[in-house]
Amino acid sequence: MEILIVEDELEIANLIKLYLEKEGFTCHLCRDGIQALTLAAQVQPDVMVLDLMLPGLDGLEVCARIRQQPGAKDPYILMVTARGEEVDRIVGLSTGADDYLVKPFSPRELVARVRALLRRSLRQGGQSPQYQSPHFQVDPSQRTATRLGHNQPPEALNLTTLEFDLLATFVSYPGRVWTRTQLIERLWGDDFYGDERIVDAHIARLRKKVEPDPSQPSFIKTVIGVGYKFEDAPDPEADAQSDALHG
Ligand code: CA
Image (cartoon, rainbow, N blue to C red):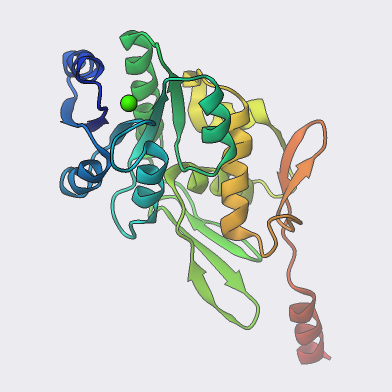
């Protein structure tokens, strides 16, 4: 397992490296955002521990650019911030981080978070069936998601690992209402240490990618006071056409 640590404070960087190496991870270090992008492309890390305040490009920008790289291995990104107030920015803006930690944190907590992210990826390893709804096809073994449209060619969706897992969860249980806690249990298992608001951030990002109008979701609906549910029905035009064919 390869971990890329992006941190400009050398003392913290070395401490993180020391603890992760003790756990058997291979660590790569760099100190600024530009270098981080180059190194991420070379190393293809499983996890990036990414400081928010960096010289060159800041952590948010690095995160956004990593998520935009098409076809590259999609690393888990654990964002590290020095100030609690920044958490709202990380969670609220659709940054693409999978989890975050506020400084000062104990190295033990960081190791636990990294392990939690990696355990998620191991759990995803098994064979699982494909799921399909009128507008989506999800293949967990290939980790591909496709949007199907009436009168449109199928479109491959470019999702992060967590967005993919959320969509697969929704499509495999159409109509089911999920609380945030249930989604966390399903996506993170018992390894979740963060804040339930991270679920809303992932939902917001997923909506941007799958909803024709993210402000008026037609698939991933908010159930007020409870959580979320996925609903998908065939397009009315498609019904009309099949009626015409059969009539
Ligand atoms: Ca910094």
